[in-house]
Length: 102
Image 1 (cartoon, rainbow, N blue to C red):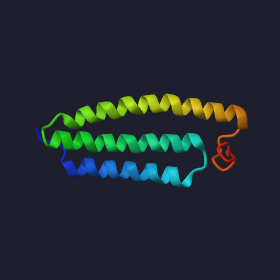
Image 2 (cartoon, rainbow, N blue to C red):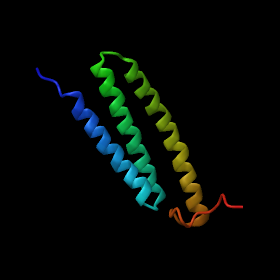
Image 3 (tube, rainbow, N blue to C red):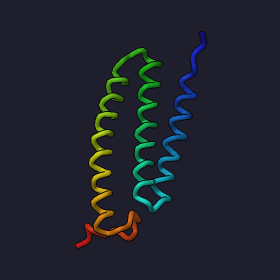
């Protein structure tokens, strides 16, 4: 049985990461920016798993497990912050939220 070459995984990961970067740079909605950051995390996870599989080493899988655990905690905290900001400002537009300005 023939396997998928490493190049295909890396190209897919690069495309996913580029889509995430475009989403972070071009959008003003906090939720879309947040989803784009998660997409970039998943692109990096795909790269780690691809190299781990290519090198026959489980270290990449362990790193991916840790990144997923941290991303889950970050998702809970990040969404809580977004909801708190939305309750105070009634918007999720990045340009209109200036809570941290003195």
